[in-house]
Amino acid sequence: MAEDPEKQWQHSDSIDIVVEPEVLYDMVTNPKRIGEWSPICRGGEWKNSGTGKVGDVFTGRNVVGDVEWTTISEVLVADHPREFAWLVAPDLGGVARWSYIIEPTDNGSRLTETWHVLPTGREWLRKNRGEDAPDKRREAARRGIPETLAAIKRVAENEAANGC
Image 1 (cartoon, helix red, strand yellow):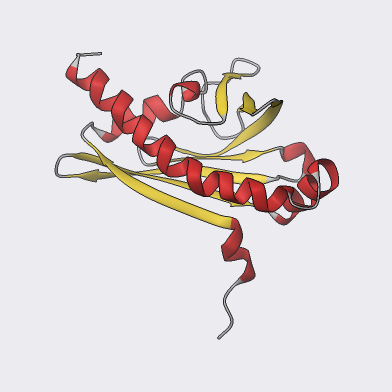
Image 2: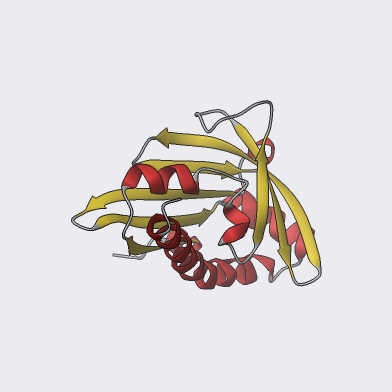
């Protein structure tokens, strides 16, 4: 049986974090905080008084090297404290889907971050950033997700230890 070609455009990783799922969910669903742990996204803002419900929209400010850009994302799943997912660039038909899945563990939570660049995203990247842009973005996500998860763990456990 042939492997699904779409699999190469998806990546996920998980980490165990010693904080309760509710605390972790509140943390990772706040776009203002993402700059504390993401190697690319420097932060974001809810638009139109959004609070993280399905259909709410937020912006994200991203930086890679000397390239900076802003994204618009729409919340697809807001299942407190289990899952938060969003679609980047819904106005373009969606270029990527990101999600956090939070599972309770004996010591706190297991956080899984998943990324899937969609066919429309790959085409947009080729057209606007060059033929090799989709591959570069895929590799950045594969490196960035474990880095992001490790930073979330560090921030969350530090806050928990300090009573924040």
